[in-house]
Length: 129
Image (cartoon, rainbow, N blue to C red; front, side, top):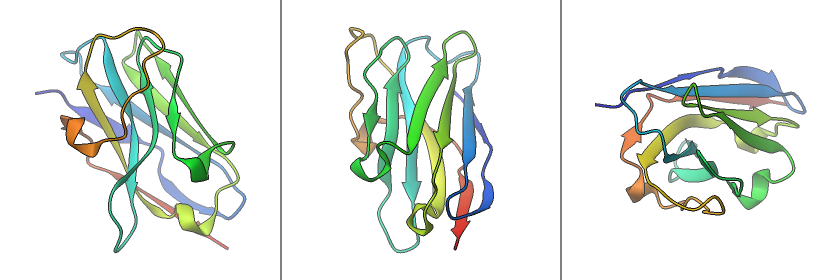
């Protein structure tokens, strides 16, 4: 069973920055869609940033474009989410997710939650004004 280990959540003031990390276990497929979802209280879980491990076309939720950047270290099977200019509405539990796939480099990972087979335990991000 693939394990995803998240780190980097916490509390920050509005306008601040945080970086999340998610490392997949050794047995994870080398090629996969991997990224971040979040769930705020009373709301559905939504995809915010996704990337194909061997690709160059990330997906971003419209509301985080220009503020969040997803990147990956292929060798470490790790993805990062740099979050800048954080807003109150970014407060949520952030989940790392992954599913294995072989695709072309321009593949855009789908934001469809049902496709993601493996999930991290979640990390809280709290933004206060």
